[in-house]
Structures are given as structure tokens and as C-alpha cells.
Length: 292
Image 1 (cartoon, rainbow, N blue to C red):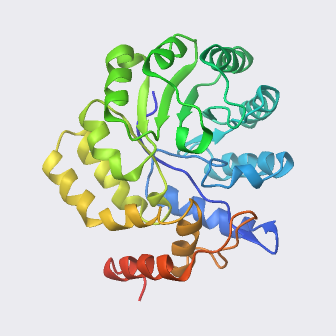
Image 2: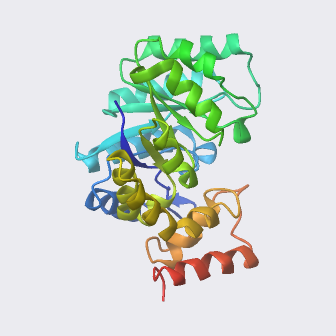
């Protein structure tokens, strides 16, 4: 079962190409923090604008660099079942520990179509699968009842929830029990989700402060809620301000300011962070002593 802190790792670019040397350093930062896993080619990794060839290269590079020292869950979801199958099969061959499957976006399948989609992937690969419920991005919401049906498939092991709906998390945990790990897709909701039975987070903030995010998750999982609350509020503003604009625009701006990446380059249609939200983010970084 997936449990703990997983970093939705960003993809650094330079001159239109992937900056492999920087990507290696970002992976090493996560390993040094002893996070439970990394998630390349999720939304934070700009998967919508990374062609399949680069997608495969990123997954392979991450697996080879990590060398089993933490888990790798590759983002392989698409709005096309055929593309999802292709990327998931490649990820399995590359040696990942699991695949993250976003609900198909734009075409907005019915519950029956969603069930058929995820069953096709479950039948095609043998590694654990993580459902990704983020209707704000995809226009499609997985209900608790549908998630419970999907959890009956042989290798659907977890769901990353970014709905922000506490009732939904609770219903999923009530219906699925230990069959399915529920992971937060929102940094601001790690503590409440774990309090109702969640198992951890797939985090954006841990690109910048992996030790602090892990400390929060570990304390919450250990049942030390006072400690978890204290840690949460130490970086509460950062968790919010990383979403002042569309992810991963702010996290790349922060990573550049902290010297973690040499260039905050994004691929169109994403564009650099605006001046006003950037200053708000920088003030938070300064207050946390993450930048001078």
C-alpha cells in the first residue's frame, strides 16, 4: 500500500529541452529527505505539454536515478484510453512501482465509460494503479460509489484526491477500508484527510521543503495531531501561495528563487508568474528563510 510523502516532481526545462542535470539534483534532494516516493510526469511535471518520447525518457531517468531508494509512481493518464495504455505499459517495463491515472479530461466520459477505461488499464498492467480525482482540472468527478467499484479491480491500490471534499474522502474510506489508500492531492488538506483515515500526500510543496512536508505526514500518521498542526501552520502560507496561479507556475518560480533550478522555464500555454502574486510568494519564502 502507498503511504507517506510522495513528491509530484517538477520537470526543469532550459532552452526548450529537459534540463537533465537539474532533474538529477531535484531527485537527489528528494532522496536526501527520505520521502517515500516521487511522481514524475504528473500535472506538476507538465505532462500535458511533454510529448510521449520525452515522457518516456523522464520516467526511465527517474527510475534509474532512484535505484529503488524510494518508490516511483509515474503519471500515465490521458483522455485517450489507448494513450493511457501505451504510457502505462512503458512505465511498467521501465520498473516503476505504480502508475497515476488522471480521470480522462475534456471528453467527460460517463461513469460506465470511466469504469471501462480504468478496467482496461488494470487488465493491461500488473503494477499498482493510483486513481487521480481532480474534477477542477478534468471536468470529471469520481464518486465514492464508483471509486469503491474500481477498488475491486485487482491492482487499483490508491486514489489521489484533489476534490477538497471531506465528505467524499470519508465515504471512500468507509466503503473501501484497507483495500484502497487515500492520498491528499492538496497540501493544505494533508492533516484533515489523514485524520479521517487517509494515508499521506502527493505533494507540490515537497519540491521545495520535502523534510517539512514529510515531518507533517509522519506526525499525522503517528497520531500526534498537536505536532502535526504545529508543523502544518509553519508552512501554511507557502502551501496556499503555491496555488496563487496555475500549478506548476508558482512552484517553478519558488524553486528558481531558492536556487533549486537555474531557469523557471515553462512550456506554453503556461507563462511566467505575474508580478503581484510573485511578490506575495517571495514574501512567504523570505519569511520562512528559504530565500535571502
